Length: 295
Image 1 (tube, one colour):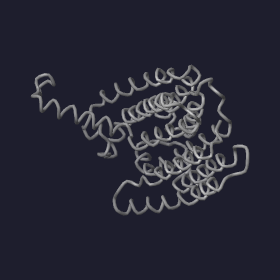
Image 2 (tube, helix red, strand yellow):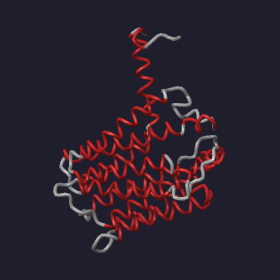
Image 3 (cartoon, one colour):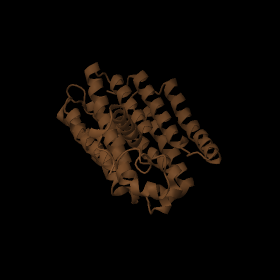
Image 4 (cartoon, one colour):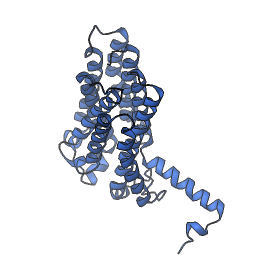
């Protein structure tokens, strides 16, 4: 048996802790987690939160993203090992599956607590978004309604940010619809790099049933719908910035798919499509923040 952590020299303990922390960060899906948290923070600023409110929103959303990312890697560890996903920290041995599972539970429990810092209604919405996302991890990931958790979770995100304001004002329907469309588009784009691996391990969500071409088309239409809803949904005529955002939503997905093909030819994982979703989301939030037409 190897030495216990308590018996390791100080430098070995530090190295083990550093490796574990790095493994936890990698297992959290750091890129989308950071992007979604940034979007929430920008939106919080845009709707008029004070610094304390922005911090509460960011921490609650970050906790939910950590919970979902860690739960996903715990549940997918065997599948990832079966298809040789050495970029995943659990199959690669960078962090123990149990450690990631404990982190997921702690982050999930922290999410509603952090939401309660604002008000109970906002806490309810961020909790609904978390539960919906966890239901995607299991059991809806391999079902014909796999897109539904993405739509619910992304739709509830702007709702949480608005409801977290003092007085818990009702979020506009067009904002919730835009979030839902963006989330649904993210689902189709996110699955594209994994279609072949998923097929080998029996995952049959809606994108797998539509195929690569159908999923690309669905992602493009939904991203455009999300941006169009944000531009034309609020009262008043669309701004020049809004029309530019619509143009970006038209142009960015095809460019990203070209980048994805180039990555595939180079032997890299083609993640450009999902990054395109995050880029469009950031453009959309900047549009909202600069227009001041949310609440």
